[in-house]
Length: 249
Ligand code: MF3
Ligand code: CO
Image (cartoon, rainbow, N blue to C red):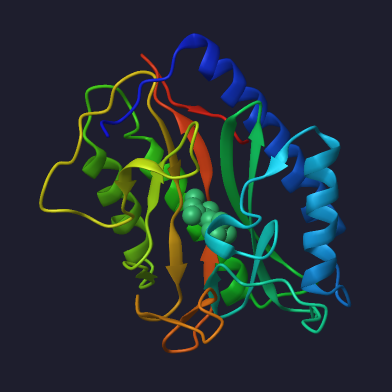
């Protein structure tokens, strides 16, 4: 499948999907507090998503059992919500959510500090977020995909952090995962040339320690191999004739 170029009608629907997802994330971020279980977050997220007449795209995706991926501390992504996992003051928690609005997907992730996190943890969260913005400086028609990937890596590594290699961003539209893959690290190839109407989920996953990750026995939860903290930040982005449009912000 070639990389799809969305029509004006499709872009309008993806804008609405993104706008709703941004609100879901704001509401989830505001609700986070010590003592909540990660399942409480999932339940609230699913209720919010359905309340906006959307479908949670992660639920049952390849067997994933929840609507929100909740990944705490050394968990990188795809943590499975559980009533037994209680958020503690000082945890950092990555929330990844996807919605489908009238057939169109939006995908976004945020990492939050619960209560009072250490300065080291707060810096990781902020650098991970900023690495996304460094990357999308290059998200312009005529540039190549690798321009985005390289910029994210260079920024994160300038702080000594490890950029996860085993998971990547992706095209998005009528499906959660479309072509192309969007790595957060430099490729030898330039990658595709960016064109107006492409929609990409750009999602740096950054570890305080090494880039290496492991999969837990639940077959979903990805953790850092060295147990260092990890953060995730993602938005659905539209390539235009000018500046990129961040649909999920
Ligand atoms: N944002 C993630 C992604 O891009 C989450 C999907 S995993 C799921 O792939 F299984 F939970 F859907
Ligand atoms: Co994604």
